[in-house]
Length: 271
Image (spheres, rainbow, N blue to C red):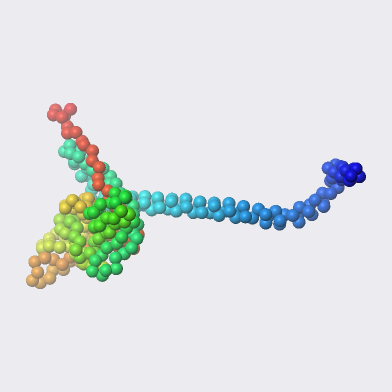
């Protein structure tokens, strides 16, 4: 035992003072390194996997938030086309209430109704999120339709192209009012009941008029693409291309009820 202790002390002295075994220690470290790597591999894989899925989830959340922001910004740009700011200023001068910026709820399409005679889709928002029957539905470029049936977690939306659906519209150029109705999947919308002498032109942008109380004023519905005057008929045959991307949009905006603020009328004498 004493000899072993003395031998150990001698080896320790030679290594610490003279680095006598440095080459041997280097060789042993090289041999042991793969074993250390293999031993730490499960922990490294676990850490990498957690980081990967955490980063992916964060990216997904950021992507969803950016998509919602883009949709909302596009809708706000559409409102500029209908001179919203001018209307607000006029209402302020009259001392009446005016609508603030629309509040919206972002939803995604779940399924498409395959019935060829009805144009409807299912979205992933329902009563739990405050969705209600008749609620306007938009995409990034225009009006898509409105909610017709609300369940707890989902809702059914009727599209503009459904033959039973109509939207009160007005020409953004001159304010001419009419109604746009659907004509089925893949078909242009129809501008109804305008006489041959109506001031309507190809390329006119049609926006919601606000009549009927369903859709707020100024959202794009479509663009006039053709005008024909059939012989023997009192009304022109006017086709309208929908502004919304009805066949490709997956994210939609549900317009929530507006909030109002009261503007006190000016007191007599200008005070």
